[in-house]
Each structure stands twice: as C-alpha cells, then as structure tokens.
Length: 206
Image (cartoon, rainbow, N blue to C red; front, side, top):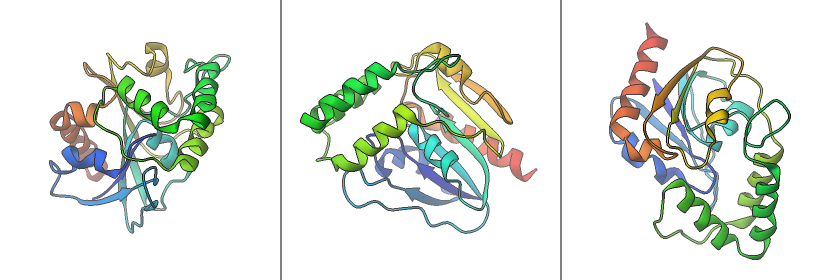
C-alpha cells in the first residue's frame, strides 16, 4: 500500500519523519504545500492511504488523489472555523491572525506552532501560500469523506476544542480514536500512530 503524507498548516514534509521511519514496509509519497520553499505536489499511482495531519486532512478531502482508498487523520478536521451548529475556532480569532500575519508572518507562524507544542526555530516562511491557506481555514468546508476514515484526536489538544474534536466528520464511514496527547500526535507518539496506520491498511486489504 502506498502512503500519501499530507502535513498541516505551518509545517512541511519533514513533520512526518518520525512516523514514516516506523513504516518502512510501505512506499511513501510526501505532499509539501511549500510554506518554506517551492511546493512539491504529491505524484502517486495506484491505491493509496492518505496519512494526514490537521489542515492536511482538508487538503486531501478537497482534492483526493484518484487512487485514494482510505484516510488516517491525526488531529484532522473537515472544517476549522466555527459556524452555527458546528463547533470550531471562532472566525474572529482567524481574522486576527490574518491581520497580524500581514505585518509579521514569522511571528504569527512561530506563535501558532508554539501553541501546537512545537517551539523549535522556524525557517523563513513563504507568506503568500500561508495566507492563502489561512483563508481556506477560515472559509472552507470539505465534503464528507468518500472512503473510510480513521479520526485520531488528542484529548489534550491545545488548538482544537473538545466539542470540535468530537464533531468533526459528521458524515461518512468514520472510526474515532482518542489519544491522551495534544495536537502533534505523529511527533508525540509515532509508535502509536504507526500501529494505527497499520491497522487501517489491514482493514482495507482484508
């Protein structure tokens, strides 16, 4: 089974290194949105399982590859901003990020990653793509998954409210898994995440 890795907002393909290293039995394809350089769109042939993080889930749901057979979404969502009847991040919070981002993208990005639990130095960003995807986070909503999806959420996630974590992906064939960790589960507990991916592969090929 080919694995297609799609990172979240403010990160890049290097985010997946700890998890991908534990899945050597599968071919890996990394989609890099290009937040810190040139984008590297995924080129993949044949059946694939998407392994996504956070906003990467919205990217795959919006533009699924032809061979997609399943998704394992870590800290993922089909909509980020709150609206009537759907829990999420208040639009005013995202709008404030957008206003500040215009003046100091490096500061906003570093603060966001620190909120997620990552305080490592941040490379020089490509602000246009980051701002474009902030707008997608504010305004976007994805269709329900057309393939089986495993949603793994962290019970101590500092970014996604509990009500949001419990209500993402309200339609479709969705299996829900709870983990004690935060918003960076593939980095915090790559061994658990690797076993979750293997379980999904096993279910798809059974």
